[in-house]
Image 1 (cartoon, rainbow, N blue to C red):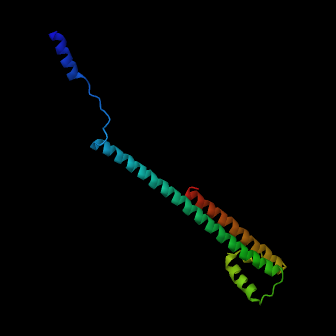
Image 2: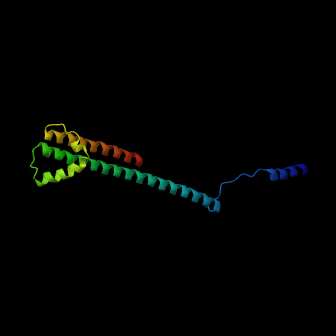
Image 3: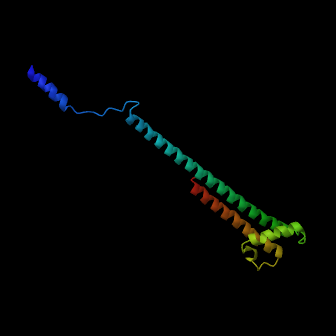
Length: 149
């Protein structure tokens, strides 16, 4: 019987200890919950950053598209007024022309070999309007991609 008692005592001493999960209310358990809270807060922050970046990209893309559309519209109205034979001394015609000339970005005198001045305005300012639509579309797409949308 003595031999059996010695083996039991040695087995208890040599038995590997297993790590038990921390009990609620102990410092280790509280630290584990704190770590989970930190990870969750970090995920929320990342999610908020992604959402903010996507929203900013979408807003910038929309603004660029609207600016390009307004510029093309000014150029198209100038073409309509010129081809339609509007009075060049009228205030509206002068106002539109004053905005259309700088927006043409050098396209206003691109084709000078066209004999009819109305056709020349139609071609040159029409190309400028198309240019603004294409460029604003490309820049808007870039903003959307950068925003992650």
